[in-house]
Length: 217
Length: 335
Image 1 (tube, chains in turn purple, brown):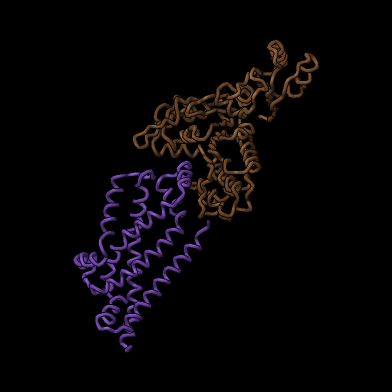
Image 2 (tube, rainbow over the protein chains, first blue to last red):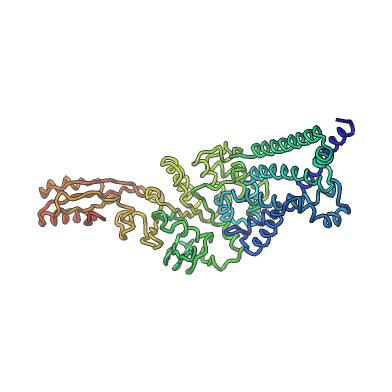
């Protein structure tokens, strides 16, 4: 493997890391509140509201059913509008974030669903408002499960970031595609794939450890 | 004495998949200040629904539930939350936040009413001392036994100095010894703080041990209500009899034989009336079952006996018991 490819791989690792980090961060900033809304407006919950639940649920389902590659292409104009360009690492963060939001929302919703309804009843009987109950009873109780879901989501974003290479996003995915696939450099292909696998494993391990550390049951 | 709760003609109907189910039918009762009020019934009788109408965790379908004269249904969300600060509740499943320490759990109720942090911690420590769990303050609930968890829940419920404590099957998940300890604690709190307590249970022993008055709920209806000692010594309704008297597996030795139930309270429990009967009348009776229990410190007993066969002798025996102040009731075999 020549030196310039080695350099490319090293900067690829960094780009992948940057894309994954920011896309995960932004997708949680939007997806977490959406998940809370999906949970609390569903039937029998604190802020039951069928209309809101249906609309948000439908949007989430539609975005989630689009294959990520299609979403990447469809979002090119939007990406150009937001960051001024449609290729490169920064540009890839936009579709990655949009693609991850519905996954995060559903994951958060399912973590919150695991919380024992008795705890919510206890909070209500103490005179807690629905918002208070969500913030101080439900979310703390769901934290270990939220962290576990978080690890799965970040690993998914990392996997998607490799796909962004197809439309000119940076990172390991782009290197694997350009050097490994188009130029038949099998060693580059396998190196990048191995690095991606290691990164996913690290994220998963970190998530499980954090979740275990916070779980008090 | 003031009425803490007053229920008037309360109905509760659930609609599920087009099917209607009436959980409460025309229930009217009052809970008085300072008493321990028991609500007992078989599972599915509607008692859990009933207790949840007292803090409006359940809305009533018709009728009114008032708390110190205020109709709960008329309250807006914010007013209802205010009122709930005076009505604490503990549960069968304890319902503690597992991700928070014991003392943080106790502080939660105070935090909801807006108590400042420092005061909150102090008060929570006091409450843990009252329930005897000071040394567990920084443990997580998962490390506690069921009885200890319920003590934490009691501390959390009482930290806000409520006027009433509702207990929804609070001891049903605990073994008899721990149940006894929790009930002693509740009794102590009732006496020391003049706290009104409403206890939902399916266990007669709980009512016997600490309740002043009891309501018996049967299939959504209020079957009977009264002082515990009256209901115990002389249950009127079928549901009450079923709860007070154990099922009756006895057959008379003869198809024409007659079985009666004698019920006596503390004043007669030191009189050897069976011996007296034999000595004074020469009649012999067959004892099929007998037991005594303590209700609010007074011994109550009941005995099931088979009377002699001749009708005249039967009447003599019954008259003899009645003259001694016992209550005598005929038992049909499949009661």
